[in-house]
Image (cartoon, rainbow, N blue to C red; front, side, top):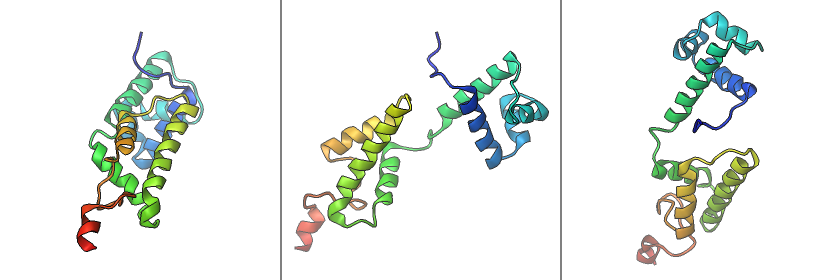
Length: 149
């Protein structure tokens, strides 16, 4: 049995399309191990042979494994914090919790396993330690607030 989550051909085609748009057909074909014409036929709606389908699924698995490999939990938390930085300071922390809740709901609705970073940030948010103090002031006073008072 494989540890890979099931992926439909349409989702596979979508992932390949996005990568081709970001790079090129030839580049993705090389990464997958297919001919550019075979990959083009797949993108046009054709069903590849079993061996080519296996190559496509293997490519997607490698891509998912590499996706975010250079991201850290703290980096993702900072990115989430930047999404709400224009809100009033007293509302930022609640907005971040709402973002995390929404992400968890989206993964559940799509029957996908949430990435490990989401569980870690959600737990840190519950503990009040998920977001850098300078990015998202918590609802409680910080040491900076106390020094300024």
